[in-house]
Image 1 (spheres, rainbow, N blue to C red):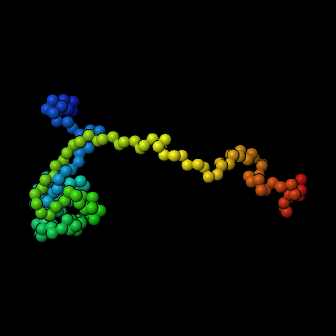
Image 2 (image 1 turned 30 degrees about the horizontal axis):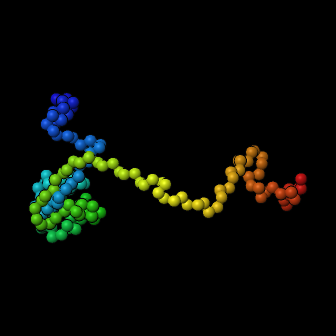
Image 3 (image 1 turned 120 degrees about the vertical axis):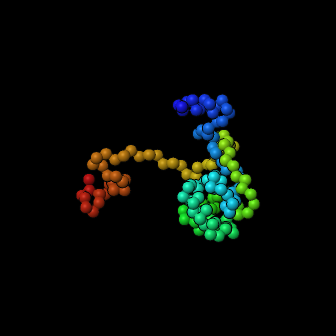
Length: 152
């Protein structure tokens, strides 16, 4: 079956695949002591290897706190902090992937709303680049000459 046929069938059934304008988000919590591998897969950044490690760890001893998840190979404290709102150690697993359209970011208020700051000093005029054989700095040029060069 071609990709177009599959997309047409999904459209007719009312199933809309996520596009760039849509983003799948996780709502609810996952109980890491009782969740099935499919439920653990809902967590962002958790793949098959990490799921096996979670299942092996909780088989030996159940999690007492969510922070214990950082003891598992491949899961660090930073990842636990990001997933903290979706993790639990007791209660039911209520997590679901929800596909919602990404709302466009509202532009910042118009620049006219903010008063323009006055410039504290004028911008100096741009000097043209020196030509070949000319000194790069005006300080070098003097009417008296320098100690190395005779006066003009």
